[in-house]
Length: 383
Image 1 (cartoon, rainbow, N blue to C red):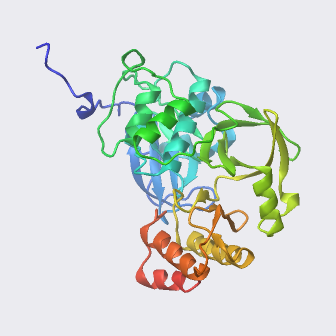
Image 2: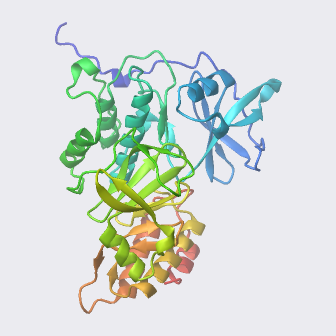
Image 3: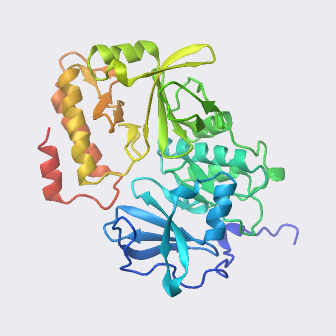
């Protein structure tokens, strides 16, 4: 019997002993006009729904859990809307755009996306700063706010490093190692970077200037911001998820000046930051708009966002005729793509852009569903 090993990942513990009925009903209209279509997931104390037009997912909990998350610093209570549920009770709903990830930690997989993996690592690291002891295996990852929300279920502890390795796994198998069973068991950027390289991800050699839990202040910020972690890194820029709905872009001074000189950015748009004795330029903007390199896309596209990407490609090509946008940083909030290289002599920039755009809209990722042929043809014609 000593050689008998149980694969716990094959066993499911029924935790649905709390919420038995659907809290929201198909066809129910939420404040703001979203209409509930169906339930995607449930547990003993939360439910996740999809809306009719596929534009959002809705996390629904009772007041006690919402208050606990707010009191422990995971989310502000203002992130939730109060909604009348079946039977007349009131519940609390958090709406996340479908272009961003929201779901159980145990079901998440990066599927080759470095941006996805770094986003999750950032959220997990930040959430650990709020509670050093709780297990996040049955937590809910909310990319919009950069957190993993604990469900407080009674399951065995699984260390953060194992949870991250599960996200990198190409299949649905789980590593259920506890802190005592894995070394290192904690997750930080350096552990995550080691794992990513071992799984074949092309991670930049640069180290981030900021780390999870740090506070950033600057003239132009509405308030001090807390860093969740880095989500994109290169020799020219660093992109960070902040706690809440914002993200922070740091630009190396020389790169920032090049962008100003070619009119992709305006000097007045950039904030000044001094970090660890190094001077950088900064932009802060919403996570609801994509900010990602075009060779590592993660934000889900629909027809409208694909149209905006085409316009950004066209505008950026006009301003920088010799730029290579293959690994350029797309900033949807500004409608531009920041190039990191130039095309080889004699290459047709417009032809390269058309091929790049066609690849993006044919392969996704998609926020709702893949485009039909008429939409594909119309979008390609923009370039």
